[in-house]
Image (cartoon, rainbow, N blue to C red; front, side, top):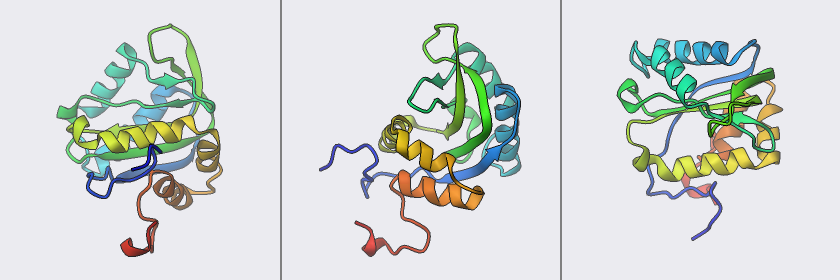
Length: 173
């Protein structure tokens, strides 16, 4: 058994990659949240109360992480999630998010990973892989270099240990 957080346990449920936006050009954290929440709402992945719940939670519990390449992991409470998954956005330019931990400072975020969870314990392995990727400067730089949404999706799937598009299950190492 490996200790690499990006290793995928085949028995663990996967957290499917849903909305993926490469080079999102916004001016504020609120714009990022509004854009992602709107897309998730359009896709039927969240309840109509999700956008407000997401915004309120971010105000109370900021999610900016001072990782090597700053990231944010905004989320809402499980009752607002209809379809578990992960939304991902790279930003065209850094956007300040409140720093996690209540320091009152901000972090200029370049990547936003939004887990949509109904049961966090069910997806613990995926969340651990996600945190491992967010701490890995070269992995995040690879995501940020994606030219478009499709390339970002492919790179994120590879980074999170999912089967790459077109790859057969038995060919996966």
